[in-house]
Length: 91
Image 1 (cartoon, rainbow, N blue to C red):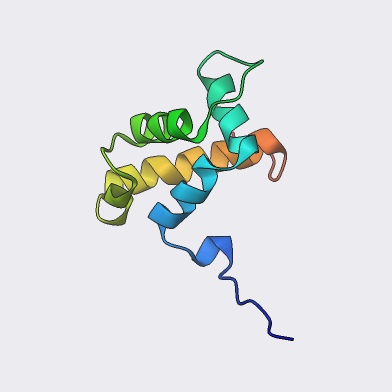
Image 2: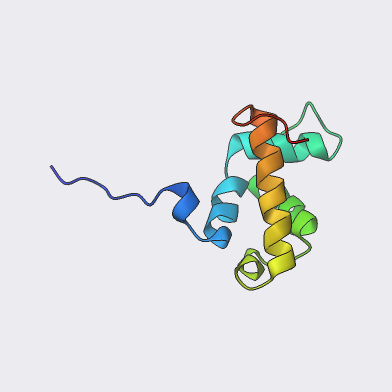
């Protein structure tokens, strides 16, 4: 039986990570909650718009060569991980 090789999430490029997150139902709920809609869940398109707004980019590809955008994305990921309980809430 062939094994499917999957690259760990942490080893993916930031643009790939962002694409995956925008399709993640938990991240969609997080994005809606952060936009003042705690009882809603965004679709992937609205979530992508939220991510682009937070990172101040036009395209997720911009995460590959814009250090400020990458820093914003890393902060957003940390906040999401804290929101889900994967890590303690940052101080």
